[in-house]
Image 1 (cartoon, rainbow, N blue to C red):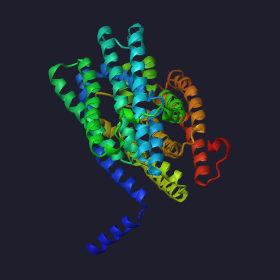
Image 2: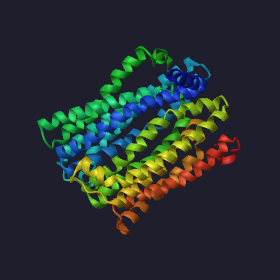
Image 3: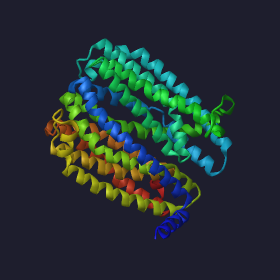
Image 4: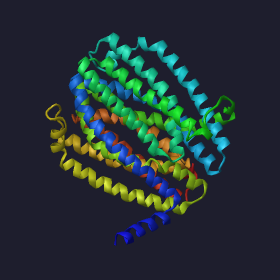
Length: 454
């Protein structure tokens, strides 16, 4: 009986499309890694709140989210590089892939150096205490900001490694790098909590240095072994490829700017309208429900480059089958979110005790956000992978334009507070989800024309 079952499983694996097998392997690795990563994230929340206090923790979350926005200022080069590498490898042109990688590193390094110099020249003139609505010491706050911004710029250059791994459909490896970074931050936070309670500067340095160390060491190892054929060199830089990276990249960049407004402005809006303490409340609910969204993202993220490869090879049957499979997975996610809402109060009590109180309204609104954003993610994978992003760009800009005023109306004027902020974000995302679904159906059926095919 056991032999029959094993034979059956072995046959199913052999019959599975090679592209799908690679995706399943990366998804499995990603899930295992993310399971540990989520545990680390859950442990980090109460540890950090106890270390900083609820109000300072809220301010830290706001500062972190604003600085994280800078990660989108790669002018879209990262995502453009991902598609270009996938295209080159699909055509078995490793020399071209290496040229794209070398050019991307050089181009992005120059851009980040300019950003650092510009920011350093103006940051001292910005009233950061007012921006973040916090009473943190001004000198310490300025120091924290400059450390986080400079480290983020360096991290962005080194982060080219993760785009390369994802283009090679090895997202599992990039997940492992992220896990190592989070583990370092958890261990470091535990250590500094025993040394100096409430010192935000220590936490900022820890958060800034950890990813840089991991990415730098990993880059040296990977480009000496597994990625040796793609190792960036000065001689491989070809500036004619810069246009190809930027022409596709600028569209991704505009979409990323819109994503910043839609996804990453919530903490800043909440802090300005209701204070840092409300940010802590919002963030606890968001982390709880977003945990399942993270799992979903880990599973589907390898599909981007796979869709690029399938589209280049005109394998629309595989795209159709895979799209249907992703839709079924989304239904499972939606059901799981509903269950999470039902048990949310019990989980909050077990997780953070009485440190923060979360209303059922906030839980429901955050759950809806996860359901809509995950559906949006499926559509984006196909659109980004095929390079058909013109409509997505226009919709993203429109949604970003209405998101902030809509959030203020629901949150402040209708007195929904943080529940209104996340509900506004959900409603704006719903517009993109509907139009994105319409476009994807046209693309997979080879009936996309006009704006639907750009």
